[in-house]
Picture 1 (cartoon, helix red, strand yellow):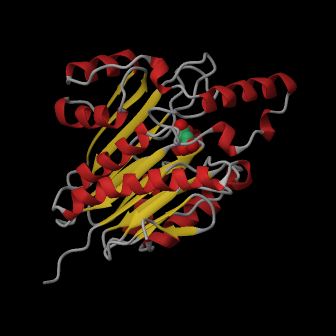
Picture 2: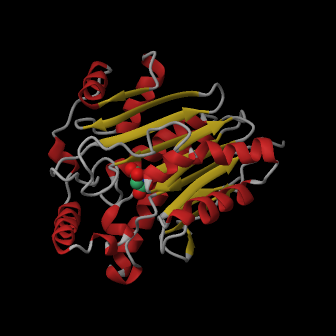
Length: 318
Ligand code: ASP
């Protein structure tokens, strides 16, 4: 019996460290975390579940992992606090929910979904987002729950660079990261989800593209699902995720052509690091990026999982 294809694609941000700065065991751990995220989503999709449940499941695993800039392990702002952004979009009805500058929500992607399902809003910010999540039954965590030694070190190094006037030379990895997922379910529904701590040393109250529907996150059935990573201000100005969908829908471009144009022409032209994970209605996944590395993974219709942090792509669990 022929079944409609299912697929999942994830990214762990285009602000990944240079390969030689960590030992192979570290990268194996990151790949294992990516694989766990893919598996969480695949269980949902393979069991006949929705793309929406799949992207949420994938992102929760990466939010809980210290290896990515989202949830536990998120970036610190210039005041030494975490302010988290997340969004989720259901391509079947163009429903969406998001939170930004949240401080006590352990899994911001769950709160984004609750905004979509249990409020009349698309985006709730700051303390109101924290309170909304609590009212929806999510137990708050102290802001320090998100802190890791790696993020403290990144903040200290960026502050030192600020003093020395060398901020422009900071690596992508020192600066930023994000996680995201896109999925296609058996019913043909597309969904996208993105979650981030944003930029290390960001100004308190700064919001990136991740929770802005159309900028960092977008999904429309029959077209594509997109989750972005890179300097959010530029993605917002280009309405990047929606622009990719528009290229497919109105310009007749394929997913690869549309995402390459966005990353390598439009966004790279601003001299920023940029990457995307995107999935079309037929289940094809692409993951272009212009930095040295982007954590990423996907499972297509054949059920085989692939994961990568740098150039080399590995078959996971094989
Ligand atoms: N897009 C995120 C932001 O600007 C950061 C990233 O993806 O690395 O907040």
